[in-house]
Length: 209
Length: 209
DNA sequence: ATAAGCAGTGAATCACTATTCATTTCTTGT
DNA sequence: ACAAGAAATGAATAGTGATTCACTGCTTAT
Image 1 (cartoon, chains in turn cyan, blue, orange, yellow):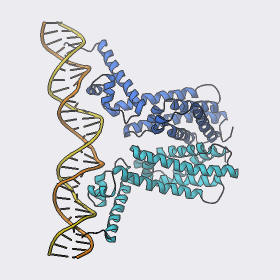
Image 2 (cartoon, rainbow over the protein chains, first blue to last red):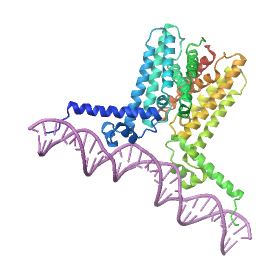
Image 3 (cartoon, rainbow over the protein chains, first blue to last red):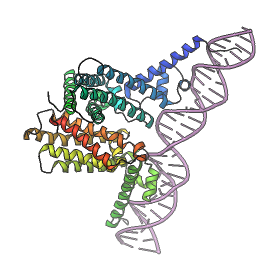
Image 4 (cartoon, rainbow over the protein chains, first blue to last red):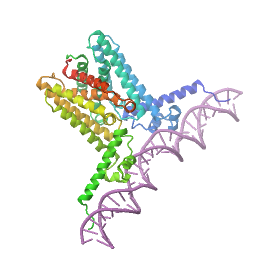
């Protein structure tokens, strides 16, 4: 025997893998999934195209990992906002705001995750994550119903509507044709976020504020 | 001179064109845009692949026409529902119901139009039509505000939320993996549609019913 | 019947990239 | 220094399906 995997090698490989992930992330954050070419990613990461395939089964697989990592980060942020103090209404507002504001801060990545047309495998991931958001909201709505600050309703259905309303409201502002050209002023952003939230909270609580 | 286009020829060509359109429609209603192959369409229409290109610039072009026709039909139905008698709240409810029920009646086509990942050109069309729906709703909301049956609000924003909420609520039930396997019972459909509408109307009016 | 010109044909081509794999380069233990 | 194996390389390949275009066959007016 002569060669055996050492810690040094393990680390070096892990670094390469991470570099590939980072560069893919950068490519996606820059132009979405569709325009992210393997050759380009390899070039950025300073490896040969073949090397990518020593770390990932396929392009789709690599993308799926990026998708999951990036979306999980967002889901966690929303979960965090839902875990603060206050009644369910306050927490839901905070969560919706978190979601929308983060999306507007990284519009291209948000678009890629929320609305870019993607291959079936990624689309499946997307559905999973939309459900993940919906479930977080659903849970909060249920607490709200128990706490009596939200009227009784089909929590699951309402949560789906929340996800849809916020996603749709963001698609326009996030769409790359616009995002590339127009810079959305902070004031507009705030107005946008406020009015999304108002609609959603009215939908939930049945009361104006 | 010898050959000159006659009425007979014009009609024959128009028929071929229509056959191509019909068969494309059928293919899309059967498996969405992505799986609709030119060769298959040509086969169904009883023409050679090359003939398709005598009638349409490109595959994308053909699809765009199908997309526009099919979506316009839906938009018209919604517009119709909004044009009946009654106050704005009643008319909006009718419109939302129309939208949802028609989608559930033709789930694959609805999915193709609303949620299937498509090429950029079609995606652009889709955005246009989402705006078209939103504008119809927006107009109705404004009348509602004038009629005093809907409280003052950002009508444009609310209309976008309506489109998002209803689209998202339908995406799950429409998604082909499900649609192919599960048949959605009429009772479930009614419950689904009712709860979508309840959320949306609460979001608009700020009152429970 | 004939010639001019358009419509239809479909096998061959093209375009596009992800993916492969024979080869090279590097790492390790003796 | 060397041999055994692993990792990296990147030019060549492959898969896919839209699109082309040289040719065939109709239609029309004379």
